[in-house]
Amino acid sequence: MKVATFNINNINKRLDNLLSWLATAQPDVVSLQELKAEQGAFPVRALQKLGYEAAWHGERSWNGVAILARQRTPVVTRSSLPGNVEDRQARYIEAAVNGVLITSIYLPNGNPQPGPKFNYKLAWFERLIAHAAELIASGVPVVLAGDYNVVPTSQDIYPTRSLDNNALIQPESRQAFARLLEQGWTDAMRKLYPVGPLWTFWDYKLGRWQKDKGMRLDHLLLSPQISAQLLDGGVDRAIRGELNASDHAPVWIKLDI
Image 1 (spheres, rainbow, N blue to C red):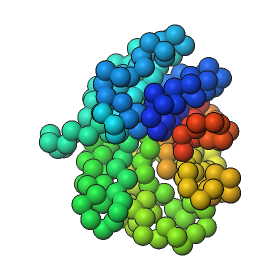
Image 2: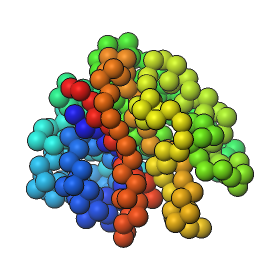
Image 3: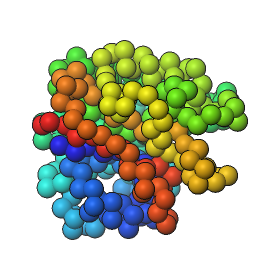
């Protein structure tokens, strides 16, 4: 089973890019983030023409997450992250596909920091950690996929001091990600490629794509029940270089399911 995560950065604006990648890469399951489309504006028919069914949680202009499955219908188990009933932002969805629980996570960016946006990021992260512990305890195979808006370590970003104040690399952000892993999750891409850059995001500004000044924000974490079934993985970097591209590239893994 090929599972991918992709921050599409406006699904309707980049629909042709998405459809072209799906037709070529043919992932079995895809977690999408930053749809930037309200619930009724999701392009479900275009995806169905390629053989993909979808579950999504949209939000007008901002956020939005989805899970696509090829020749299957995702069975939604959650359309929001528990822990705060007043939080209406569309940042989490969870569905079962072929016996595996898949998430799409769009963790808050947190900038500027310090401030309320960074506080929201950390509070959201705490809720994710609590829910992830429950998923581990359930004993089911899980892939926690999504855009975590966290650069886990210094090797996950190009050498720079210009982003020292950025919420993505703050000690609190990295510590939260490390605490999540300590529950027993396996960082799939780092298991496959323990050292070196694995960029998944290149900012539109300052020619960072052309200069390959990227960072790793998009992650696939595997529960203990499924980590041994990891076969392969990669980043489809070429997608970032296409016309009208998202500032993220798809990240994928193959599991022996």
